[in-house]
Structure formats: C-alpha cells, structure tokens
Length: 340
Length: 231
Image 1 (cartoon, chains in turn cyan, orange):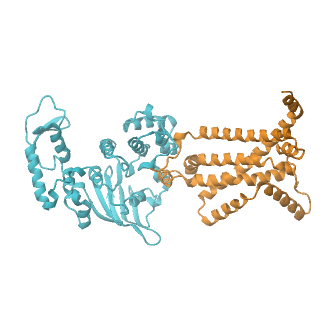
Image 2 (image 1 turned 90 degrees about the horizontal axis):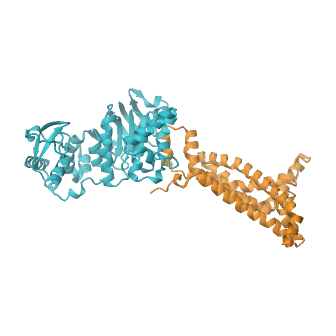
C-alpha cells in the first residue's frame, strides 16, 4: 500500500509542482495519474521512488516513510518503466532485463530463467529477441521489453510513465489489452501516468486527475466520467464524455434486467460477451457479427444473452440522461481511441 | 631494383631503429595522455561546479593553438628554467623527457574534450532511468555513461594518436630521435632518399594506427549498440 500524506514538491523559486497531495493506493490496485503536461503527474510518480523528493508531507510504502529508507534499496524494490528512451541502447534485450536482478546479485541461472520467462510473458520469443539491441526492435517490441524489465525482479510496486505513449493507436491498444491481461495474473500495485483520458479510464482501477499540482478528483473511471467533481474535470473530459461513458459502462453495469435468460447456444459460439465487456466493445461486436443477440458467458458458464434493441434503448437513455444535446452528435465517433 | 636494394642495405637498419623509437615515443605519450585525460574528462563531466569545468577546459584549450614546434621548444625552455630555479640539473633539458612532455600536452586535449562531451551527450533520460532502477552513481558511470561515451572517447584517442605520430617527427630537433632524424638529415643534405626513408614510414604508421584503432572501436561498440538519436 502506498500512501501520500499532504505531499508537496516546491522548487526553489517557488514553483509548486505538486501541492498537498493526499491519496492511497491499495495493494494490487492500478492508480492512473491523469493530467496535461505540467499537471504534476510525473512528479507525483517520481516521488514514489525518490527520483524527486517531496519538500513537505510524507509518502509511506507499507507504513514506512520512504525518506527514512535507503533510496538505492527502495528503487530496486520498485519496477520502473518509461516512454521510448527507456531502454539502454548499448545493452541487448536480455541485458536490459537483467539489470535489476544483477544489481540484486541473483545467481546467473536464475537471471537467465527469469529473462526467458518474462520475454514469453510479454509475447517475445526469447531465442529471437534476447540478443537483439533496442535499435533492432520496433516501437511496440521496445515497450514490451520495457514492461518486462520493470517486472524483472518481481517488484510489488511498478511505476509506469506513459509506457505506451510513443506508439501508433493500433499497437497501443494491443499492448494495453495485453497488459491488462498480464496484470490480472501478476497483481501488482501500479502507478500509471498518462495524459490520455481513454487510456486512463481503460487501465485504471482508480483515476487521479491532476491540474497545476493539485488533485482535482480521485475516483473510479465510472465515477469520474459520470460525476465530475468540478468544472475542471468536466472540461477535461470535454466532448469525450459520451464515448467515455460507453467505455466505462459494462454489461454488468447497465443492469441485469437488460440481460435476458435466453437459451444456451450449442456449441459455444466464438464471439461472446462477459459481464466485464464494455459497451464500446459490445457495439463493436454487434457491428462485426451482424447478429441481433449475443450470448453472455462468465468463464465457461452461460449466463444469458444481450439483445441489440435492448442495448440501444439503454444507450438512448444514457444520451437522454447526460442531458446536454451537444453531446449527442455522432461526429465524435472517428475520434474513438484517439489521444486527447 | 639495385638502387632499392642498395638503399635498404644502407638505411634498412636505421629505418627500423628510427621507426621503433617513433613508436615508443608515440605509445608512451598516448598512454600518459589517456591516463590523464580520460579520468579528468570523467571528473569534469560529473563535476557540478561549472566554473571549475570552464577553467580547466579553458586551460587545455590554450595549449591547442600553440604550433607544435613552438610547444616543443617551449618545453625545453620550461625545463631549463626549472633547472635554473632549483639550481641543479634535475631534468634533462634535451632528449626524451621534454619530447614526451610536449607530446602529452598536445595529445591530452582531443581525448579530454571527447571524454567530456561523450559523457555529457548521454541522454539524461537514460541516466534517470538507471537511477530509477536503483543503480548507484558509480554503477551508472561504469555500466551506462562510459559504455555510451566509448565511441566518443575512442574517436578522441584516434585523433590524438594520428596527431602525435605527426608531431613526433619534430621531436628529433630536441634530440629525442624517431623518424624525424631521417627526415631532417635528408632535408639538410638534400638527399631525397633519406627524406623518404623518414617520411614514408611516418605516414604508414599514422595510417596503420588509425585503421587499428577504428577496428578496435567497432569491435568494442557494435553499431547497433550505439545511442540512437532521439526521435
């Protein structure tokens, strides 16, 4: 668990990068720090591994003040992944991943096994990639190695600074999905920095929206989208509100009354929904399959079906509820998934 | 053919002897210059006192524009003055000692400047990542900054070596030997063969060392392992 207690970072000269930040990140949660550049999101993240030290307030990890710990030890226990330049250009993929395990003086065999395991985990064939240099990798492959390196010594906490920032939208989405899947297996406490509200909503258990060093709202993605705490949050979400609410609403959240019992198809179809499927994905699947109903499964159990007409009704209601007529335009559609 | 044979029987031994002196002078000067310039460059690159850095770099920069012959002559003068001040002959004012000092003074600058820039040009984001991963300052220096600065340092050593081989032809004037002996003797007696006997090996030495150091550099740092320019 990570706790910020009125943490501040004031630079000599009086510039306040972060002001009175109080928040908690429980174990295994992903907290997204969201904001424009200069909002203090990266500063906040870097305070956790003391790359930047708070000038007031406290930051505790598992109840212990980080300022009382040796920064070198602290950092070796925290995974760190950053945007594009992150990999050491003079080290191979394997050497990059081995950095922290070597610092921790793991035996060689253990390091080698760990490299293979991690490369497999991030979807890179070890025999093909272990001895390549970063300059021989594509953007997406670099980021995969970056993620693998951050996880190398199996740290309980991982800091990620726009890890998928420098990628094209398609690769980014692919990596986001893979990372979500990976994360559900490894359960780390993650602090994830991004300026992209879609990424924030997608990756975060909770989202902290910052502006000018102050916390504007700390909420689950759905709360953030549906109950903006103030004018700033409302403006930040801007014209993306409706898309974001489709992204944060899931089959579960639109209510069980929408789900019809149906009859279990046999055999199990290739395309199906789960309670966690977002409405954006549901719409996509209706479009892709052209079917009027889609079955819902929870793992292997059939739980009912969703009828397209019912879904459209829900969406119409969402449009109505959100009220403001300007948000009903469909000219936002092209921007789905795009960066802010 | 007979002329060539005659030439080599007459000067062969002397060419070999002078070439060996030339190489020894160059290697000693380069070794000393590296031992001084590389650590100093590293220290300056990590030094937070901007003023100190500027003073040292400024001092080294003053030496560079001095013509090499003048520098060699000045070294003799300095040695002479030291002897006068001490009141006894503590150092030989002629011969190998002033030659090596002059060569070192000349060879230091390119290595120092390249070491300094080499470390300074390492992307600060890369250094920050290394810090964030829990490397100590020393570990960052040895496993991140120095490897990434190596192409620069090696380029400095290469430039310096080629210069030193050239300047070393002049130290024969202060009695330090080397291929300059043949060249100057050939010039003063106007014997073309003798001039060539000194000049050609000196040129060949420079080419060989340049090529050799280039190979070593590529072997140490494969082209894929270099820091790519920021996108």
